[in-house]
Every structure is written in C-alpha cells, then in structure tokens.
Image 1 (tube, rainbow, N blue to C red):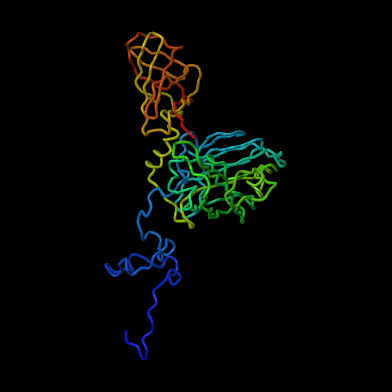
Image 2: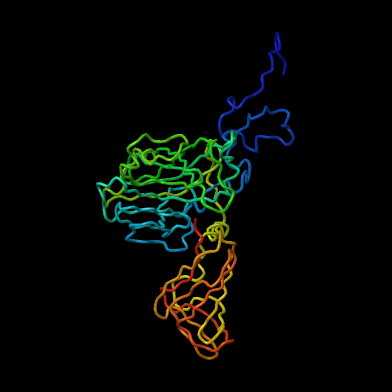
Length: 404
C-alpha cells in the first residue's frame, strides 16, 4: 500500500482488535499465517467461531452424561426421601428430611440446542420450613485420576467453568458448588433463575485452588453439586465464593427452598465442567461412548422390562451350588457390588431337559472386569451340569454398581 507523507509505524493486531467469533477457517488462505505472525496468547478460544477447530479438546467435559441421555436404572422414580442413584446415570440425589420427590428423565429440553433429555425434580410433598440441618442437592462425584490436569494444589492451578441449562417455576437464587473431598475444601457460586418455566443457560467460573492436590486414584475427589434446598446450618454464613476450608454455614447462602410447594419443579441438562475461564459449546459424545463411560460406575446386565432376559451360562458345582460367570463390557471403577432383587422365583436355570427356579444372585468373587456369582440355597441339580440362566419375572434384573 502507498502512503502520502510519512509511513505509519506498524502495529500488530492484539486480541482486543478482533471481535469474538469472527475468525473462521474460510477467512484464512492456506499458508497465509505462520506462527511468527501471531503474538503469544493473542488468539483465544473466544475469538474462534464454533467449529473452526474440530475436536479441539476431546473429552473436555469433566462431567459424565451431562446431556442426561443415559438412564440405565429407570426413567422415573417416585416417593424419594433419601440418598441414591435413581434415574439419570452418574447424578446422585441427596435428600435429608426436606420434602418428598419424583425424579424423571424428562424430554423437556431447551429448543434448538441439540439436547433430547433432561433431569427433572418434582416436589410431591412440601416442606416449607426446613429444619436447620435439612438439605437437598443433585451432584456428580469425580475420580481424582481424571482431574490431575487441573493442577490443583499448585501455583499453576487451573480455573474451571461450569455451564448448564436450567428451568424452574420457582425463580430466585440457587447455588452450584465444587467440593474437594480430599482436602475438605469447597467453593460456591450463585446463579439466578430469572424467568419462571423458561430454559436459561448459566455459566459460572471458579478460580483455581492453589491449596490441596487431588489424589491420583479412583476415589472421589471432587463433586459438582446443584443445591435445591438447605436449612440454616448451610445458609447462615457468607457464601464462600473463593476456595476455603469447608464451613457448612457458607456453602449454600441465599439458596431458595424448592421444597416449599408441591407446584415446584426443577430441570437441568447440558451440564459441562471444563478447564478455563470461559464456556465452550457442549461436548456431545456418541451414545455408545457415553454409555460405556457410565458403565464404569453402573452396569445393567439384564433389565427388568420382561420375563426371560438372558443372564448367561451357569453350572452346578454341586447339587445345591449354582455358579454363574458375568463379564463386564468395560472395566469398572473397582470390584462392584451386585444389585438384584431377592424375591421368590425371580431367576431360573434351564438344564438337562428341566429347570430350577431361585430367588437371588450373590457375589462369590469378583474384579473390575468380571464376577463369579452364585446361589447356594434354592437350587437342586446335578454337579457338573450346565444350563442357561435367565430372569423369571418381569421385575427381575441383574446389575453391578461401583459408584463413588
């Protein structure tokens, strides 16, 4: 370019000169930009249009099943008053004397965002005046070995950003908390549901914690917690918006009481927790990959939807001892426990032209990859015989659990 008079001094572009989402791959001629042309740290994720860099960080989402798509246990559970995993995989419900609830894997989702399912909490028995120690929340617990790249407990500790879609008829302040089990530390952030019965996207950033490293193992190190109700033991202090040692009074200050009316319901989907100070688009995974990640913690081997669901091959070690081998599709977090009903004639083995019915299946020995199960109280066969083991009731199932 020609200039009249003195040529201006060149000035390199900085990130502030570039509007967010303006750079696309179509705007860049092959070979036009080389590394030397770009000042350090001037191109950030916010400057790149969505999809410009494909698979920029595979498995960037620390949360498993954040789209609520997998629900191996059930799609609905009612009369909930205590702790447990009920519907959507990897999301635990904690209820301590604050109402009665129905939980559902719902199809009510934000329009045009790619989600098919959400988790819904519906209050069926209200508690308008919770006692001081009452509390209720939904959380996901995370293994320490999956968190090492956050560099917690060092001077280089990474910030994290939580993003999610939420909807409720009850507007007001809610609390989302990160809780460090290894070092008894926590940090909370408030968000506001502004419009009743309207899907809203929320983004919360948590500073990195330079105190207390996560254990590099398969135990619980971190939980991502969505508070829904809390007594004064958890609300009477000052909200802990910086990492600190756990003081219960500072964990859920300002939290509304979702349990104060049977008209109340709360939905969430698109939960993503990632390293950094900004939220990226939700990371959708193929359903088979999502399922396998969930099966590390809970594996439904035979479901309770119909009679005669296969379990596997069994054999009689003796006339009254039936053994069954089960192999898991993925390595579980640890040796799981057996989850199965104990009711009359819920299981059956067909062998040698006849059959035996029995009530339950228990663990003999197991590992994270397989389990040798048995029944030694209701069967009567011939040692050495083998046969086909199956469910014998529409409410019968066999599952294995290695949750945190």
